Length: 141
Image (cartoon, rainbow, N blue to C red; front, side, top):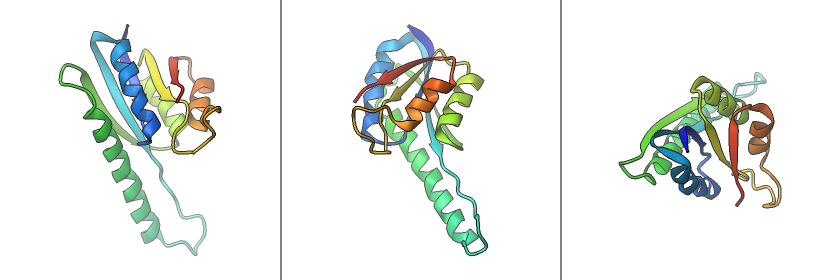
């Protein structure tokens, strides 16, 4: 059993499979941290509208909040759940949050929104596996 589990979500249907595994792996008084990483765009040329980029970033942040809220609803009141939204690069941010929060386990879906073929590990999951020293439970979909 694990005391602190990081459960990253991108809002895809694949991340929903993580919930059942997290409940089974969590100790009785453990905590689940649901994390969604919002992308952040920056203007790279003078022709890009800062207003449009700001609006897109606002949308990414809103979507990330919706993702954690949706997943949190899948847990009953007996499970201690903390929601977290961070802006950044998904794989790097997941690894950093896992370290900062000193989690015992990261549970991540093998495929997410990238739409990669079901037999391949998603790029975010693969980067997390290669970049962390934390235990990782990879959920194959």
